[in-house]
Length: 131
Ligand SMILES: [Zn+2]
Image (cartoon, rainbow, N blue to C red; front, side, top):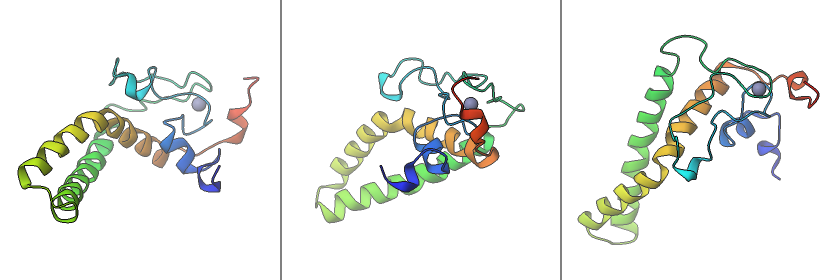
């Protein structure tokens, strides 16, 4: 596996939706693409107990991140499909809606994961399996 995605790096925690502190516990109880309980999140890390909701409104920051990310993604996607692949504007937007519907849950979770990982540091001590 690539170095930057190995355990202990920010990218590992963010992309795998793991607890930012131990990189062991999952942030979400269900798999992203199962589309069940998509927006449920653990209150605490199931492995090390890290609080995932340290204060009310903690995830407002994540919401802004996902807005910014989504806006650029949508612009880029439509521009690519329309100009590079040469499909009509209507088809481009229809495809965009389809792609957003599929990745909406992942982007929601990804933004929260990114936000958590920006606010908490990895602690190798916490990742031991004997906790
Ligand atoms: Zn943890």
